[in-house]
Image (spheres, one colour):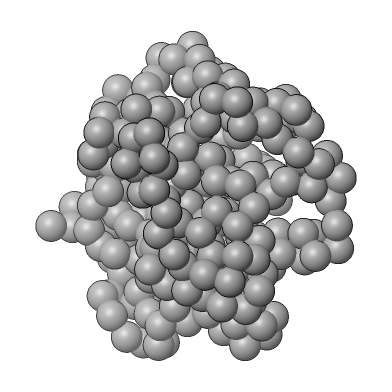
Length: 266
């Protein structure tokens, strides 16, 4: 069932999103070559708790961690791993959810460890812009297919990268994952019509090698499943939580008040 949120609920989710965004901004200053992925998880968990909130992926389907941390060809859902040290040129995706007094938010961000390369810079730029092209289509009266088509057209037709299809965005609040499903590919003017009060995530995952397919892998110690690019090329992801309003999309997890200004004053 799709729930339409009140202004009060959207404001609560925006407060949750501000905590989540603050945790990402904190990480930007701390990630470095040689850092253990377990330390990333602990830093996020501590930050969230210090801001009167909880990392709400904990306990979902038996998940034990505050974050998902996926590196290089890992697309999504990989876990923090003790002893796994970050290396120069690593492309690291950190994805987590926050609940502040029951108000949920969800955001993933991609980071480069140490030095970047032209290939990495291009992958990150394309993925980041794809997110915002999708957000621009999150208008009352548009359809889910309009979001997906904008992302697919930019990623695959214009940039010849792989637009992952099997992993999707979703509705959010009060549960972490709710209806509707938000696809990052599709046909314009097709699918569910967007209404004011919907709160959704848009979270394109892009594979540099051009293939959109992914493979499933398993963490031997826990049996937890995660995903890697089918062609083993580098993968990036960016995700925001946003509200659909009569004045346009409102980003609830913004890390950039200046750059996101037109998405914040709804």
